[in-house]
Length: 197
Image (cartoon, rainbow, N blue to C red; front, side, top):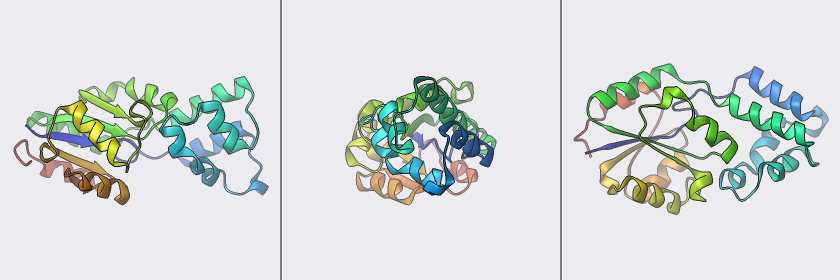
């Protein structure tokens, strides 16, 4: 049996909108004189995704100062909300894949606060296995992250087809023997059959 393993961000969901980003920056009280907010957002994101940093530590790094408790709650809520816009075409393709007999799983780099909200999204119900970097304590494209997912799936690399929108993550999965493909269009999922791996 073949597992269809999907990245979450910008594969199963759409990226945060301009309104989402502006809202998050407003909660942060961002001063444009400091530069681009979104650049600051990504500097320590992998460490946050790996759970090496708490939410308070991560946002202190973004803001350049510790966030107030109420501000931290609003930042984490708005951050997660920006990543909860489903890509309807991909979700439809995933549903078709499930009907063809593929087993469905998610593998996402995400901090705990975002992972919890993703995991609760009703439109992800078809995915029977869900892996988040914060719980694995490893992020894509680290080899250990993919090995942990394979163990969690009880699958051999050749039994998994993986889609991710980042070339580095695709290369990392391919390095451990997974059939890894760069996601560009939801229609790519329709080419995966239950006996293709």
